[in-house]
Structures are given as C-alpha cells and as structure tokens.
Length: 116
Image (cartoon, rainbow, N blue to C red; front, top):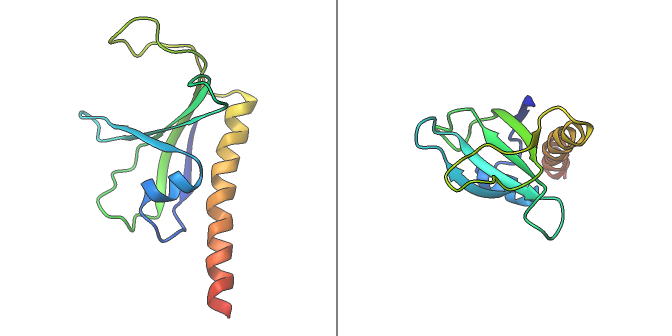
C-alpha cells in the first residue's frame, strides 16, 4: 500500500520510526529506498515491511512517501525476495493509519509543548 505521511517529530526519520516500533533493516543500493520492519509478535514473521520511497536528502524532509506490506512468511529460497505478502489487506490498512496517527500525535504534542 502506498501512502504519504509527514515527519512531524523533529527527529531524523529512522529515530522517529524506531519510536513507532519500526527497525531499520536496509538501504537498497539501486533505489536508495530505506527499509524498516515491525514484527507482529515474538517471531520474525509475520511482519510489516515499510519502504520509504522519498529521497531523504536532509533530515528535515517532511512529506515522506512510503509503501507498506505484510510479509507472511520468510522467502523460501536463499537470495530471492519472492514471498507471500499482503499489500491491501485490512491489517495493512490499519497499520498505515497507525503510522499516520502516530506522527499526527507527535505534531499535536509538539504544538502543546510550545503553548506552555
């Protein structure tokens, strides 16, 4: 699922996503996309896999283009990326909204801090 969110935290995006329970996994050498994962439980799978498709030239980049899917199982063959993934399931839609809500709540808390 493709979506856009704003980094409203004032933090670099990898730090902000860590606070949202995502962990950095990779930077694609060809595309420059940054990959992050969040497991649904104690096992490595299933897990959400988030790719940031916005070039992150500066840490102040606000509008972040992203794509999210749910990896159901580990790829079966070494060196391949083919796997069983959900791109538009209800779980993916809910997680997309959770990410947006997280960053929106950070904006609101920063705004309230400035009011005092």
